[in-house]
Image (cartoon, rainbow, N blue to C red; front, side):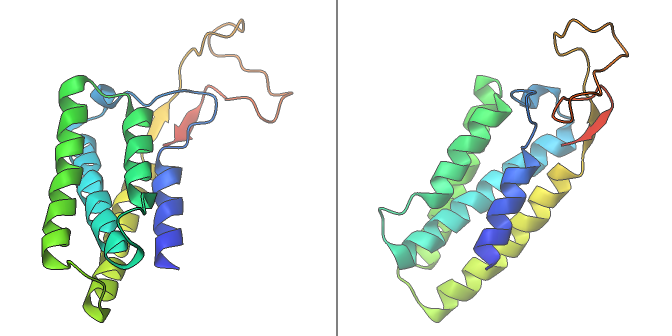
Length: 155
């Protein structure tokens, strides 16, 4: 249950329909730190899940790949996110090399931490500016309920 909630929170933190990549370099330093913390947490989750599901389980690694692609960060920051993921993975893999009741409890605690981080990111509001449409700036086509409005949108 916690894994599903965490996965939904992580995915919703990066949901920007029809807008494209988030471009991490446009994020404020506290947001970038939250991304690094989330990457670390994804690494922890990956190690803990693999302890019980086996090395072939790539569920949380795939989420990290999606986060990296969605952020479309510059090479240096993308490298920092990947290092953070790997550090979280190594820490928990060393601490819990096999499945146990303690590893299951740790997995639940990490899921709660990840959910809080993803919620923090998803609560950030940005103004979406000209997306290349033909409409003059400040106007939006409200006849299409699936269109992206030019008003503050949750991140």
